[in-house]
Structures are given as structure tokens and as C-alpha cells.
Image 1 (cartoon, rainbow, N blue to C red):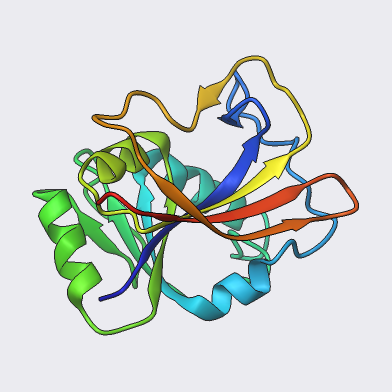
Image 2 (cartoon, rainbow, N blue to C red):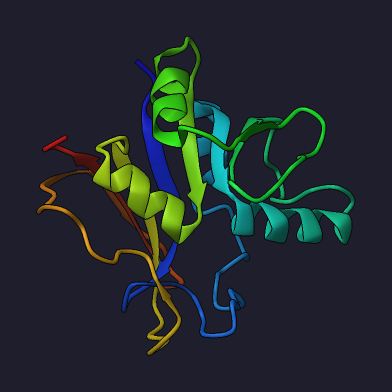
Length: 178
């Protein structure tokens, strides 16, 4: 079965964006392991808000929502969107069952790109297999937290850690109690 990997940038105090939705604190000066990560995946789960932000970014950057990202099968989870771009799949009903079905299909691992609501739902359903967090050396003090209330404690096993000269720490964990 394919793994679902939550992979994203986070501040040391646990925020994934600032109070106005900003992510200007994210380091973009080097790869930070992204190209190796891209080799592991062939699909992406993305929520409506993150999808819309990525589409806006792509419009202003030659169609590229994430620099260097290979073509991925995008599964957009939304109950409000009616259409998505060509090649993407809209998941609007029974989303957790759809996620389970997609995970059971052949292929590489799947990137859970965001957002916070989709992440929380998939964590609570036990669908997330790994966390890959790029912890940036900044305290925002407020904004959108990655983790809110979980139904239970989640035991993690460290798979890999890497420290960069910029102070960013990359952490990869396996979720044990699923």
C-alpha cells in the first residue's frame, strides 16, 4: 500500500502560515531535500484553500506551483469547488473513503500537501503514515497551527533528521499507532 506523507514547512512554534496567510518566512535558497522527496511520490492530496493558493502562484510563475515539482496526479478535496484544472481529480464526497481507495491503488507514495483542515481529518482517520517537517528557525507567535486537537496521542518514530547551515531542521517520522 502507498504511504501518505504529510510534508511541509513549519515554524519552530508550530505554525504553517502567518496570521495573514503569509509564508514569506519559508526558506527557498536551496533544495532542502525536495528533489529526493519528489522521487518518492507520484500523487498529491490537497485541500481547496491550498489548491487555490497554488493555482494563483502558478499563474504568476509560468504554470509552476512548486519549483522543480514533477507532474503529479492531484486529488483536490473540496465540498465547495465544482471544477478543477485538467488532469486533477475533485474529491467532494466521502473523502476519507476516497483517500483510502487511492492509497490502496498501485503507485508511488502520496504527498499530503495541505491544508490544515484536510491534514487534521486525515490524521484523525489514521490515514497519514509519515510526517516530513521542515522546521524553520523562526517563532511567528500567531497564525495557523499545523496540529490542533487530535483524537488521541500519536506515537512517532524518527526515521531521519538533517540540519542545514541556515538553521532549518528536516525531520521525518513514521506514525506508529494507526
